[in-house]
Image 1 (cartoon, rainbow, N blue to C red):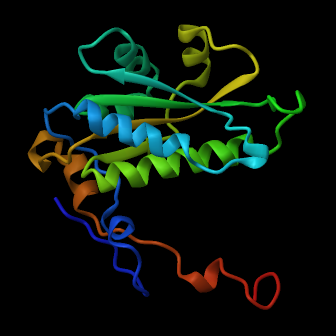
Image 2: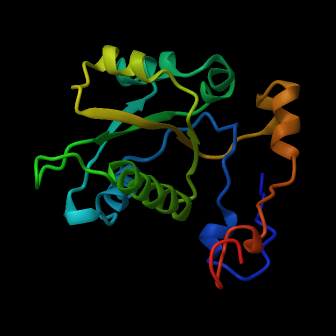
Image 3: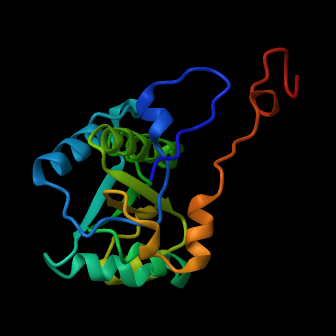
Length: 194
């Protein structure tokens, strides 16, 4: 399924094609593609080059990491995420490894890595759907994640699948038009709100 963005201005084709499907093909992502996707995350910018992100990768059928990530997802997300062959969790280090003090931009920097991952995935024709609907405490406990780290987002990855793989409610959500706020609502060129 294709859902190109209806932009007001031309943007890069990879950005235009990117959307977050809830249906995936029953096909594994090739290892070389996964390597390039995670390499893109590796080269994301970060304050002080601190690189606070860590990535838990669950590949369906490989080991129990996939199942552990899946079990942390909220039920709403489990309904469709079960179709994804790869589940990922972006985990951020709250303490700077350079200064050993609180890194006040650890979430921002980890978001940058997730964005780079997302764009490289799209360049590889792999779709991602990022989720905030997961149980952080369960992930922390299940994977024995140290206190200084925080799970930030869960990500389903795979090749876009068919609508009929989804319950009807989710099919309707998939068919819905993509929308965004207009630039005038968030781009202020003459001071706040202007």
